[in-house]
Amino acid sequence: MRTHELLIADADYARLAPLAGDADLAEELSLATVIPMERMPGDVVRMHSRVTYRDEHSGERREVVLVYPEEADPASGKISVLAPVGSALLGLKEGQSIEWPFPDGRPRRLLIERAQAPAEAA
Image (cartoon, rainbow, N blue to C red):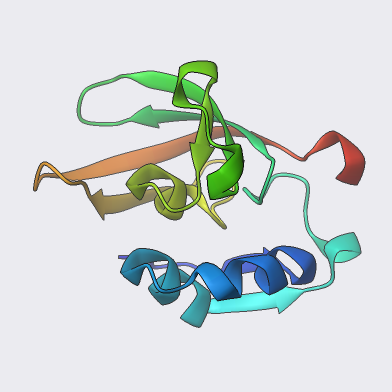
């Protein structure tokens, strides 16, 4: 599903690895290049990034924050990394897109329009 390098910060990887029982997340982590947090580019989606993405099929645009499962609150735009869209966004860079299967059985192509690093990492 991915055709580009997946970058994950070392601190995020350490916290995500125990959650990898989820098939989508486990696959993403197995493909990851783990780098030190201080070397993580600011335009790569990581945990607590604020992300604006567009569904290229429907044209729907959303702004979300990628969070750990216990922090998820879809009503306030906090999307779990274990949600289909959360796993899809992880590691993408601004301008990249990914085709990802969603629970309704249809693949969707998501384009990252903006990825903003978390304030504590900026």
